[in-house]
Image (tube, rainbow, N blue to C red):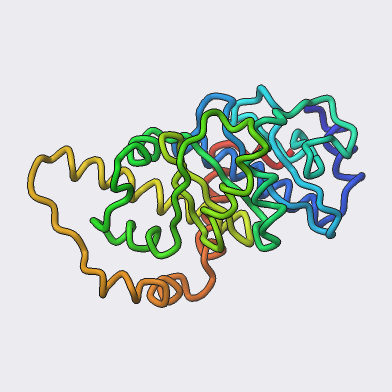
Length: 255
């Protein structure tokens, strides 16, 4: 995108929206960097600050490694563009996101991936197992949603919302992973932990030996321990370092 086009978008939005655009573009780049992307499929959405029920999402057809702050498309809950943009979105892809944003005011960011490890665990009958410290953080706020085909059916929305409830993470059976949170940083951190837990589980199972499960009593106290580990900051503790990593590699997400 040219400097004039970038400046044009920045001039049309509030400083708060621009910061959200930069953070969301960074989240897309990080998903690509960690290998959780699925070509141009799946989405990460973020609520635009200001209370207008507008959201930012990726332009359809862009690789996650190509997303920039200016290229993100602003839409309403129906997926209609509310700001002029040369880019289209995938309305069907926004179905899952719009359902959660509408039901959860705290869901400032909804992150959905088809990661290989996540899909593999989603196909296992017992789902995520308490085999690692990472799995405990994920299990502390995790739901499951049964597969109903490609997410095109509006009638699926209430079932999806009910299965998520007030939880942070959802395993979509035979499909993938989803996290939502009050910030982009928190949604990314939740996905990092969930995806890591899935990867660890698959590697442990592949080892062929008898697995040792973590007792339920330890799981019961994990939320308080998580807050202590992050000093109550959650994703905000790691986010500045992740942005520095991106800036060292390619800072064009800020354009």
